[in-house]
Length: 113
Length: 114
Image (tube, each protein chain N blue to C red):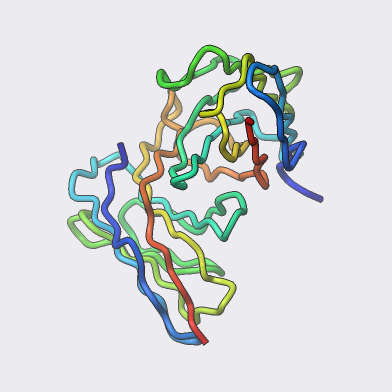
């Protein structure tokens, strides 16, 4: 069974559209994350979320919003897509805190045209 | 910003040990050293972590210097499948706020050659 899964794997869309990327984990973890990897391969944290707290990296535009219907899911919704949003987005999960390893999904490659 | 420094690239012969260095001279007493790797186009994969003592698991060994200012990840018998970017990350071992977040640097691109 896949521990952390994401859909879709590829997403091509036009500027100005709104899109969502879904993430599910079956590890029972209480914390989930979204990371962005740009064309230069830098991986940056966007959000971390558990049932108590959403931590937002201050560099993330408010067009990006995480939505968690339940503990096993953290979806990423993006409004008014821009060319610069093109990247690979990775979801991850772990137990809360800095002691525990994170498990990453396979990534979603978003291309905005 | 990342609090670690790693060489941008390294080569290793298949079957030999790969030793990947990392400097973290400003590490604090409550910060752990974590290693992840990213094989081409895949999600990062956890390898190992430690605080002060050397650690070993089925994937690798982690050697941390006594002053904790640097560490070395050792892959004992590198295979072609170990070709990846390896990230050394310093991370606070706490429960609050953003302490779980991983701050990735540029990593070391390890190429294992036949």
